Image (tube, rainbow, N blue to C red; front, side, top):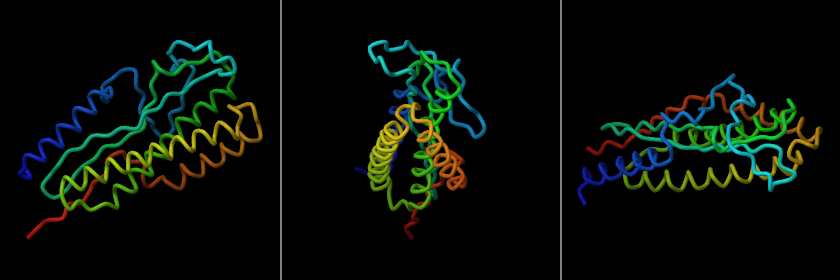
Length: 193
């Protein structure tokens, strides 16, 4: 397959996966933004009353899209909150803070992705696609592990001391990763001479 055909397939596949996943234009999504906190009005999904001990669910999604240039690949990677899949039955400020923690953990993982991507040099489109796929899988696993640990150590916000500890951790991680807040990452491409 010629490199230009592979490039078109790569861009097309990324565009289709982005559109199929809801796209950035979707009104049910809120993009993580510094200083913007969730409110209970953002949780518009239908509660699952089968989950007796669950008072709220925050649904986040990490996703990106690319634009390929001759000397670089621009990749826009963001953390989104889905209003239609997130729900609540509780209304305490303490619980809302816990749910914000889930959204922030998603952003922390997005920043880990952006950092790794910024350090990548693209030898060719095929190897970069493999790198992206592998990195996305690793970040998805990291996000799930952090989320599970967050839930266990805070007892879904019921452990006040555990929640305070996690609030500090999350704030520290957000501060330490501030240099990767921009959602746009430029991947350098090797220019063959």
